Length: 59
Image (cartoon, rainbow, N blue to C red; front, side, top):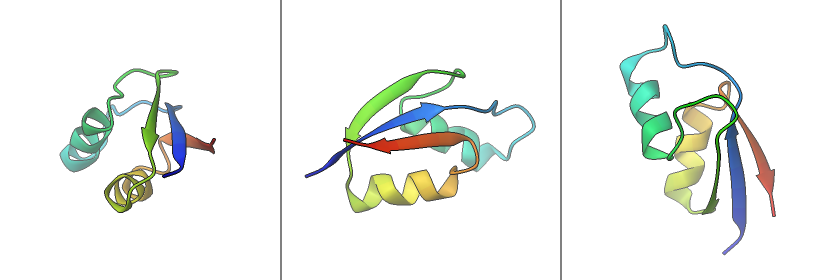
């Protein structure tokens, strides 16, 4: 499977609790933190939910 690098670019302060939990589930939590994960349908859905808070790069 293809891998993607997800970088948090915006704060989760004043965001709904579900978006905060999604950011934590992705392994993020601080601005500029990055994780590399496989691009599964579940991860793609999580990225779509918080797309305004993250930056995604395909590898």
